[in-house]
Amino acid sequence: MGAEKTDEELMLAYAQGDVRAFDALYQRQRGMLYRFILRSINDRASADELFQETWSRLIASRTRYRVESKFSTWLLQIAHNLIVDSFRRARPQAGSEETETVMRELDAPESDRPEPVLSEFEQRRRLQLALEALPAEQREAFLLRVESGLGLEEIAAVTGAGHETVKSRLRYAFAKLREKLAE
Amino acid sequence: MSSNEKFEREFADFLAEEDSRLAALYRKLPQMEPDSRLDGAVRAMAHRALNPQLVATPQAGSQSRRGRWLPALGAAAGVVFAAGIAFRLGPSWHGDRGETGAPANDVISIRSIDAPPPIAAPLSPAPPPAESVAAPAGAASVSAAAKLKTQAETETAKPASNAEALKKAARLDEGADNGPAAAGGLGKAEKPAAVATQPQAFPAPAAAARKRESELDAVERKQITATGAWQNLHDRDTGKPGASAAQPAPPVSDKRAATAAKPAEPQRQEELRAASPPVQNSVEATSKPVQASPHPAPGAPEQFAPPAPRTLAPTVAAPAKTDSHATDDAARDEAVGPALSGQTAQKKENEKIRSKDSNASLYPEHWLENIRVMLRDNRHDDAVRSLGEFRNTYPDYKLPDDLRDLK
Image (cartoon, helix red, strand yellow):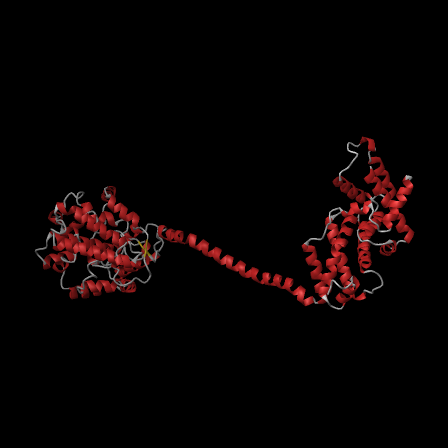
């Protein structure tokens, strides 16, 4: 029953009191949401807290849910707001330009690397490090695109940014990651 | 193709959701997922949102049940702890009460009174005629019988086995009296409480019982009646077997014999104490604090045996000294039976010792009450002497005002 229904139908069923609909919906979205949160903030304990808080808010607002957009978009929007709040509560971090400057200075020239051809394991490690080094907006846009499979419009809806802004963030993120992996 | 063009093409693929190299590499990253605890918390939260009673109740209920059980478990643990402490300290409490010389209402120290005569025999400068009657070859058997009897008396904490042991000792005594060959030439004089010789030395049992009843004061009778000894004493006087066989000494015997006896000299006491044999010591060591049940079963006469205060052993071991002080009973016995043998003399001596111990077998309060009775009966000398014995027996006891200055 739950597998045949869409996420939105399951959410509506849960809002009507069907607990099994929530279980099916949760089983679908749990991994994606968790990875999005975890890779956005790079802290497991905080990710657990935000993950639980995201579902808590979804449960609390179940009766106000309307099928106006994809369920995943609504869910990621809740998570995005919580992530932004957590960033605001955290220490002030360096801006994107400052981060890029530091990363540029830290990177060694390619000629100095002993192994120009990196293994796949090393590439994954570098991608993870590069993701963590991205500015939050760019990383979030990248994750929403790659992890959640959202398009530009949906990313814009989740993040509340404009279409071109999202595209620009994605462009910057893509360029930095590509550069890190190509080095 | 320039690098910019290449980038734009790859970025377009990335935006177009085609399988770009970067997206493929990202999918190879570890697929992190929430743990089961987090899943359970979220699911419980969702269920609780729909039905608050169903999901919230188990947790709260388990906590409240745990909260209710905690005080009960704590109380039970406390009771077990207290019981353990009481169990561990119980024996030491009894031991302390016995050692401090407190009233010891339920502790009677038992000492064999059959052993002293053969022990004192070699020390006595003028052995009584009764000792000459005893056959030397029977000494070993006598000591064996005395040892067996003493062992039986020391086991007062075990009433069942105690009665058996006493019967055994009584049989051994009787066998020694009736058949010297079977007993290895056992001397009769060395068994002061032998039943076989008792009818010869004393008047009719009924007369003796009446005499004793008249002499018992109220306090002694009360105590004896309470402990069941009166019945045993009466049985012995009426000639019932079994009761008299194992009765080593009545708790309250002739007062006149006690009044005639004089305390032993200190020098003599020291001498005899130093010469006390190891058998006596072992008996004292093993039978020092013996628990007596508050309601002794009938037929356990050793529970009423005199506790043998510290001054008893030297007195017992000085037959020559006690012989010099003839009591009224002794005179009467001599008048009744002119052919009194050495055995009866020894018996008489032991009777005197027992009568002297009669007050010592009492509790200190009862002993003092007896002294007051003596004073009321104008037996001042007896009272003074008994008080002296009391002071020797209980040196730390604080005498009452009316007896403190008694001279």
